Image (cartoon, rainbow, N blue to C red; front, side, top):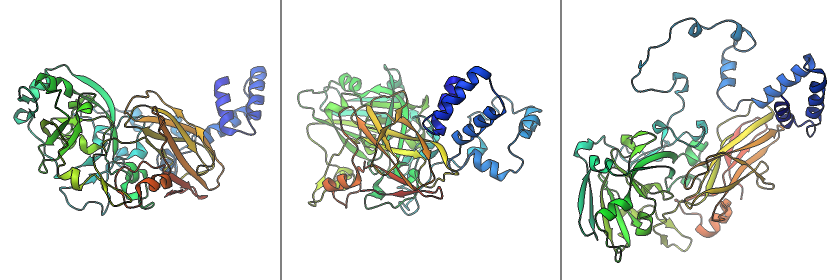
Length: 453
């Protein structure tokens, strides 16, 4: 009880835990009474104020909801039999969660073959992205490929080129690791200023899963890689675009894997079934889906996507190629753009941080547009090249506020402000925008996307 009251005292903060300390003393001596119960009820009401949709919206839409009647009167589901086991052989989310889904951005890609669907980050918990909500990015559409007819070939600077079936690969020693994957174009639409309303569209080309597969180093060793001359590999997909990416050999021999599993089951077709490359910390396009070939070479391949796409336009007009690493980045997912705070009081600010160079070491949060920063709580686990969930206690006073998060990784890299990034990269870039995201909370409670330089 004491710990609970202390927590509520922090939420209420009226003033500086004085009320809470006095209440604790009274309860320790005299126990609970009506006045103290009233204080607790009000405190919990403030602590559980809803953001945007959810329980609060349900209460508004159903006049009979609330009070004690809903507890005392048993609903139909408490007085009748439910569905049998395996009613749905493959489990699906509740019908009441149907609004949480991947969404396309109107006008971003209008061709069926080359499209993007964004992860609804604002509605997720923890760090793992459900497979059915993992973002999609395709260059020629996706196919559901028969694994029995799929093959992976390894050739080039190896002693013995080989061809593997999916079954061959699954018989080899496997590993399972959790990693984030982020498209190099994530947050691209906000390079020139805030242009999309919600975190689903600003940062939704991001996901995190547990991947299972065989280390690529094992396969390269099995083929007898020429370690003296091998400098790069070329990964090729079997989609209609034959998408190809160059990867330095030191990365290929480090933590790259050929994966068939994601979140405890086989890959989904839109995520590369039956085989994809997993390149932890690298931009998503390097995680080649429907993987069919790996060639070992002694120089970068400069293929189509590496020469005309996924290149960074610098201020001097030159194009920077092979920007493999996704730099340290974070974003507040709640409260965030498109949501609305229903009343003044306590809110849990939560979000995600990640770095392609390793672990997140710290996340700071500002509620005044970057004038003051305080350390957020980083929730476990904190893993290398994986999403990290952070939380921060905040009591909104009803005034205009600007919410920001700033991540620092284990190399000491600090997530930059947008003007710091533009000073180096200019205003005409598209890819690799890892600037601090700002959300402005209006006095009405509406949360909108803004930029603070």
